[in-house]
Length: 206
Length: 249
Image 1 (cartoon, each protein chain N blue to C red):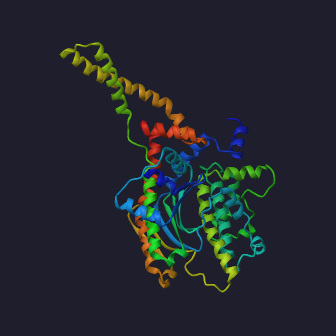
Image 2 (cartoon, chains in turn purple, cyan):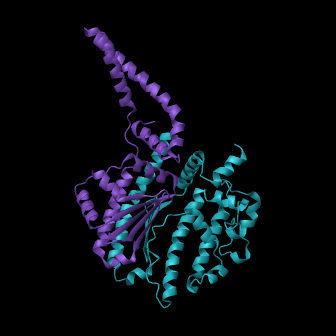
Image 3 (tube, rainbow over the protein chains, first blue to last red):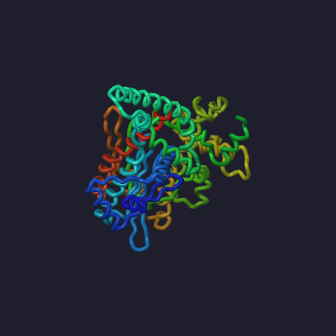
């Protein structure tokens, strides 16, 4: 639910910009989330779009709008260029209300921080996967060898170690085969291909 | 690879291979170009949420000339600043033409662009432009050259910064045309700049105008806050790019 609310504040364009739309309610919600030290997670689609933006553009633009009644005004914009240049633009209109400006800036920076925290690829699961598959195999073999005795248990442990080693090698070979395809996949114009590529990268470390 | 598919990729959507190659190449350039982190803060009359469309930005800056500025009724006090944008564009292209590591390197062009590169204040009116024209109709070789240029990440980064400056100038021009007596004030200039060098040196620069501004305190507070958070966020972004690079290479 929180994720859906989070994403309803965002708009990611294909070009290079991320827009935030704030109003009194969203600012209040963000203050609350921030004070509770909540970490927001983006869905795979948003993560995939953002990562693509970060990889193929020269920098990321974040622009915050404040909505009041029917109108929306751009209040703050920050552009982060990869080569180390950051440009912040403050709208002169918002200087009339310094408190609101401060609130919008805090929300803006907090959302940027949350977004950037969603970019890195998740933890290495290749070892875990190899151990999991090996354990499954040993259990199946173990079931066939019932009743178990001390020697069979030692053999099963040895098998577990050997299986995970073999599976890890196989997965590594598969990774070598997959790597160039993933390289291309994350740069694909097709959203679906990009999503699948990032999904695999999030699940398995190469 | 045959010549045709290359042309095709520049005319339409850049191929995945091209994007991948560009990514690796631009990352190399970016890493070479990081002498410091620079945080700039400015007050603007209007924030435009418009997307950056490289072709549009290139076309609009390419068109700038004294005659064009007069035709467009650009306020006289701003004309030199518009011309400076056009000169910067010319300089960026001259750098590409003379750089042996660039895709656009032309040995024969080095002599032609020398006056632009060697002279501290070149007379651009006397130098024939080397920039390919985006104004030609149909698919001419110059149009293809523009398309190729707009896929160069180094050129794109410069173009983007020039476009940001042009947007501010356009807004100031609009205000000046409405009210020619209006004083420029703090708007549309970088009022505070902090440079954090790799060796740890920190340089702060402030525009004179900030010291007379009634909201000086809040503006400086915003800049200070941006410095603290901005550099952390930039590190996060760069860290992600480097992580992808390390994992997939």
